[in-house]
Image (cartoon, rainbow, N blue to C red; front, top):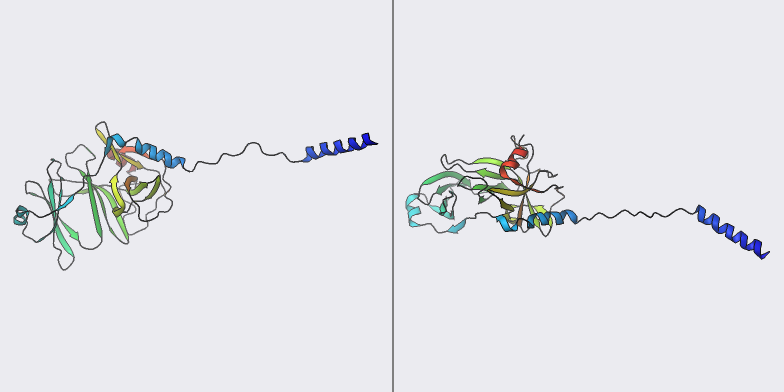
Length: 261
């Protein structure tokens, strides 16, 4: 009797084991959400020994020579080598008129007028200088706009004609603490660039999902896209997802070539 009872128990156990579902042994490995950020930081860190930075202007007082040279009332003066001869030049703004418009004189260190352009009292205007090609004069990174939107451009100087031309519309993005933020001009500290042989390369991306929806140029006629250029700085506003991928180092000429329609 005992043997039959034990046999029944063993049979029941075997049936139970056979019918029970098998447990998954191959678990899916969780994605490393920080890996992309680490890769970006690694690429930037690799360039630290050859980093190239903005040439920044400095506020200065108007000299007697400038006051004699410019007959209008001078409102402010910046000192910066915009001609590339290693000697500081001057950018002088005159007092704005009743329409909110003033003149901006670009004066060389030899006291010659290189450019004379209008500037406006409303909105904002930021500019930085950096030599990105083999010409002596530096290019400019310019941010012009207002509360409704802004244009971010790389501009080429023509010291003969005194007229600047747009080389590239870009999307500025800050990298701070392994995270990416929209690069408002007041948040930008410097550009992420490096010297590679005789070329200057910019840390950039031509693969992103940034949509420009403000009152600015969103579809340049000579570009099929606006590439991302990366900057250092401190963000003051949070940013949504930008879908930036494939960060790389490219020269300005190569970025223009790959962005061209």
